[in-house]
Length: 137
Length: 112
Image (tube, rainbow over all chains, first blue to last red; front, side):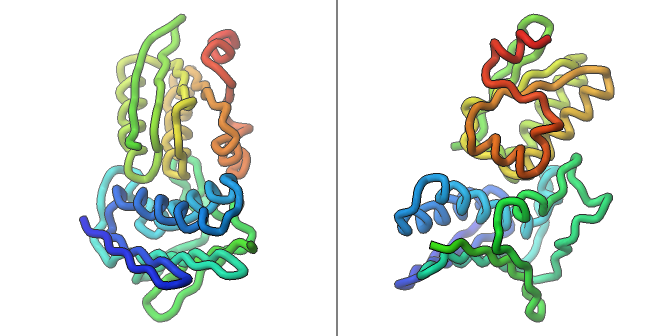
């Protein structure tokens, strides 16, 4: 288990190993940065949920059965100016389409993020997949 | 805060009081508890989420899985939740229509 954090003037980046226990750390950091925007607690809660959810999805749905998959770390970058931006990235392709048989116990993995965030996208740059979410401030 | 699970039996129902965070890390423990209860013949479950601080889609998956398990035995699963931030998650995912969600244990047990 390992986690590292670096902070610049406008952004915080956290990198975690593929350990589901560390997703909580990401949520705490995301909430802390969101509070710096001086918006209300509902906003903070949404950012906290979204950052953790994106992180958990990139870690892999296989964690629902308690297993831990090996692999590259997951990086979370949170920054704000006019908008608050959360980018969650990891190496390797990520299937972001909910197929009819992809649900975990009846919940489509990406449904919550899609419903929660208006500005939500998933990009692929070489071997890196990034989930980007932003909120106007 | 980690996940806490307390179980008791009342009026023919099994009440699981859940506290803390139900997420990708802790949800398997809740699933194991539900599986254990159903295996022991407890088919009418009440999940009290009043003390839950956080819920993600993995946690939702465990709840839906539990619902399927008890329904397979003609049982039921009621949720107790009055926190708007959690209710919002159920609404966004369309699960507010799937679960019977009550505001208190008294309300859930009265609706039998």
